[in-house]
Image (cartoon, rainbow, N blue to C red):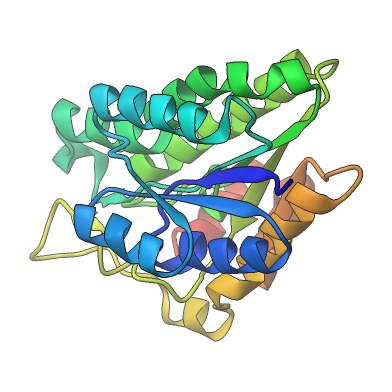
Length: 256
């Protein structure tokens, strides 16, 4: 029997690439997307399409119920990958915009995971994997809202990993740096006249979604999954600098 894995944010980029990799590894992939047209496309590609809007609690409840029914309450893996970015100086971001940023990137992942744990815990095995970011390790001007949501996801994942330590379910974080996806084009810029742009040097180190997908496969298949999977040279360097440099030095680097 194939093991069932649900992936959110499957319409493109990291989610779609991971779905292809996991399917090739013999998993049954339930591919969740926000738009009905993308759900239909997932079915055409050989996945099981699930409609899911992470910003809508009712949609999450409906999707979780559908997943549990389709899998017979036997879900092996959950890849919380969906989300988006709100970019702009914090003074330009309203409370409603900040709430939406957390709703999609954090609250939705929490609600979905809690609703699906009953389909995982009785079997005493499974994997829960989160797409975090290098922005879950550092914050920079104009990316405070997005970074805050990823910092929250990192802390939440650490707590969940410890709480599930005797359950047989392993919890991992994937921390990509610059990746060639539509993420940047889909960012909600609060100041369209002065958008937050990635530094030109970031493009030199950008990798394809397949690089992230391979880390996700490792998190779902390794006998003992790693707690964190950094992806791209940028993330590896940031992790080292965070350990070695004083905060003021990091501030100077991030302000350039």
